[in-house]
Amino acid sequence: DTAVSQTPKYLVTQMGNDKSIKCEQNLGHDTMYWYKQDSKKFLKIMFSYNNKELIINETVPNRFSPKSPDKAHLNLHINSLELGDSAVYFCASSHGAGGGETQYFGPGTRLLVL
Amino acid sequence: GENVEQHPSTLSVQEGDSAVIKCTYSDSASNYFPWYKQELGKRPQLIIDIRSNVGEKKDQRIAVTLNKTAKHFSLHITETQPEDSAVYFCAASTRGNTPLVFGKGTRLSVIA
Image 1 (tube, each protein chain N blue to C red):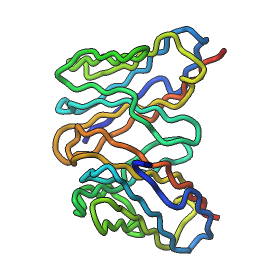
Image 2: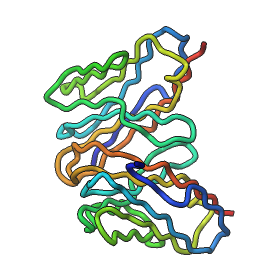
Image 3: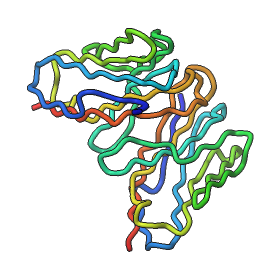
């Protein structure tokens, strides 16, 4: 009964490739997020969707394109991968979009770009 | 926008001692302050949170205090155990569609 799940868990790929990461939550939450955690462990928000609508887009290169087919899923597609994209990507969800909502994180996808 | 500073970046304590991690925030409108624990290779997990209408909150060995005037909040862990070793993140946010802003994390090592 995993609450927030992500696939794949690990992703190793070459520079220039395009890859996707999938996220699903079964908590009935309305809001989902993507975070990037770099090698220094800094957690930075990338995107937020509320009921399939984009509400936060934090100065992320347009090579990154999120897509929410329904409110339980938020996928992340990355074009033309670069070395600097290597990081752990966490999906999260919360009941609502308000800043005071508890966020529940997925297990993370470890992306390594060679 | 909100800026959250967290100190120290690393902290080593002897098992049984207390650990304190401090965060400051810049936006006086911030009203929600969660703390997350991230064990090695795992996801961040909420351990305690506090809202701006409360000055202190406790849950067993963990407590969080909030000083709105000074715009800082702290995590206190008493009687530390080796399983408390992890990276701890503070965060702050306001109402509305504003994102959680995280501190840079504190790596806590509890030495047995």
